[in-house]
Length: 385
Image (cartoon, rainbow, N blue to C red; front, side, top):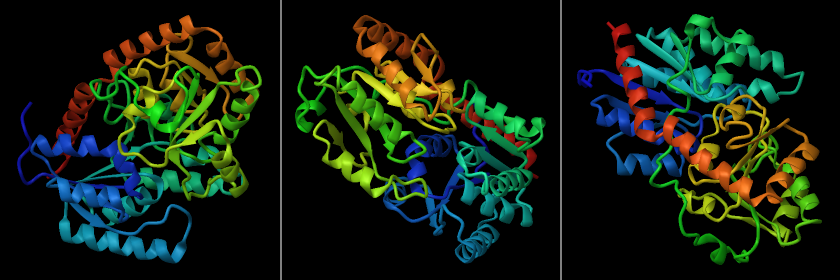
């Protein structure tokens, strides 16, 4: 694989530095392939760490997730000024707000190659009042890009169905995902978390990793957990995540209830989540919408059976009936029934776990996914003058 010429540069843009949890391996792979990579995002600890530990230039631009007209205008002007100064050959913007502002600015400045990485469709979980506005914003964002890169098969299909962009502009790399799974890091092994968190060694543990919000299905998970404990009093719930202050944040009363629950452990944010999976018996992701949930792939690589939903993106993260079970989003009864099936069948859990690791190994090993990503950006060079 030949390296691009040194003058070729890519500026990536994201709203929150939390997205670096999935974007960081891709940035490093491109940098190692000889492409000059820089990043635009809101200030935060993950952005600071990236700047201090890698040669990647990080440009802080405060961007709010929600609608904030004056703040958005200021962010747009800052992005416009930054792009005018840097003049990258390519830009790749993802996450809704950064993508809208960044690609508008890039089109105004006629940046030669403009890519929109679609990591999910916020419009899917929006209220009826907000939905037309968000759909317009998605289409406007896509219209400013040469390519809309979808990170799962169902996301590509949904983007086409909603006419986010012409079918010819929608692409997906390999089997999906943007960075794959590190199979050495995410693998079965000794558990060090249960003892540290006060979870009995013989307890059955349901697990979740990610933001603790409504759209991730946390209210349904809590309801299912309480119902399941009537039959399985030793059941524990390990929440490897944090209470995110987003617009779909959990109500304070529910947060307090989770914190006070004697059988629930909330770890808060952790940069290294691989040990958490090894403390679980079943991984549950009751999400309402996704792009492609890498946490489900990580859990499968750790040989865990998965229970997730038929939501866009999530449905691509398992092989139904082979590596896990699918349920409708927002349905606590169906979620409870699916988890109960696996709690009552240890042999099936183990078989699903083995099948899951094999499936991830075959389709989502990080080296092959990152190689496909590097090859894509090298192909996109040809669009630049």
